[in-house]
Length: 274
Image (cartoon, rainbow, N blue to C red; front, top):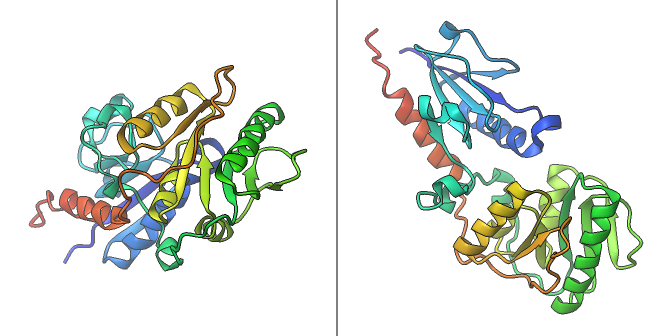
C-alpha cells in the first residue's frame, strides 16, 4: 500500500510565538506513529513532493497547489477559501461554529493531577511585554490577589518587579510551565493556547489584553464562555475589578484525535488506484 507523504510547516517561534510551533511539533510526532511519511518543513515544498501540506503559521499567504492537498490551521487570510481549513482556537469569524473540543491539549497535561488547590498562588503569563506594561499588569495582579485572598503571585515573562508578593520568572521550559499551571489556584493571561490549557485543568481564569486583536478575542471569550476580561493593559480604562472564574464550557482534550480524523478524511479523497 502507498504511504501518504505529509509535510508540516509551522511558523518560526521567534515571529509567531511558541504556541504554533509547539502544537505542530506534537502533531508531527503523532503523525509519525501512523504509517505516514512525515516531513518537517522550513519552506514551502514543490508541488509534487507531498500528498498533504499542513500549515500552522497564522494568515501567511500560500503558493498555488493543484495536486498537493493543503490543510490550513487557524488561518483567516485570503487563502482560507482556496484550501481545506481547520480551527484550533476561538475566533470571531467562526464563533457560532467553533467547539472547545477542537482545542489541542498537549499529551503531557493528561497525566497531571487536576485537583483544585485553594490559595496556593495565582499564575500569570506575561510573554514579552515591556517595563511600563508590566507595571500595569502587576498593579492589577496585586489587587486581584487581595480580592481572591491568594497572597502569592508567580509571573512568567514581562520585566522584573518591585511588588514584594510577585515571584518573577523570566522564562520556563514547557514541562515546568505545565507543572506550575497544574498546581496554581488561578491563571491570568492574554488570549492564547495557555488559557485553554488552564481551563482543561479546571482552573479559574481571567484575561487581559496587549493589543486590539487580543481585546476582541478576550471579549468573545467573555461573551461565549464567561471568562472575565480586565481590558487592555495599555488603555486608561483598564479594569481592576474583575475576579477569577471558571469557564462556562469545559475543554475536553479531544483536539488531537479530532484533528487526526480530519487529516484522515482529507487523505481519503485521494484515489489510491492511481
